[in-house]
Length: 139
Image (cartoon, rainbow, N blue to C red; front, side, top):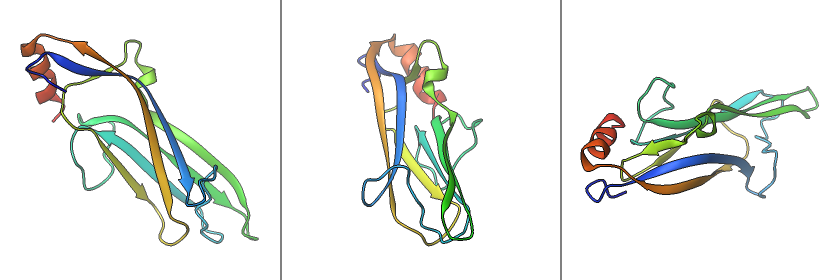
């Protein structure tokens, strides 16, 4: 974004998908009878771990929770969203130059995965002073 040029990003929707190497949904972690979870987040700063919703850099977050029976057969796979910009009536404004996607799995082993996120966005204008204040508040 070009804060000095008064252009900021307005995110209207965040649409995540968690897929395995075969591009299949739902993503089967392949954990052989071990329940597991995967968390993802979009932030305005780089992070070394998944942040809570009170962190000012978090734009959206969610995850996948899976349970298996003893065969091992997946008996439940749930995609959850902790916070998503669709929850805000006028979208979510971002004035930083970069957005980061972070992913963490609660278990080791299993299949590799991809987390894809599609953002529905528009560019909007804001005064330079307001855009700079917003950018600073998101870091």
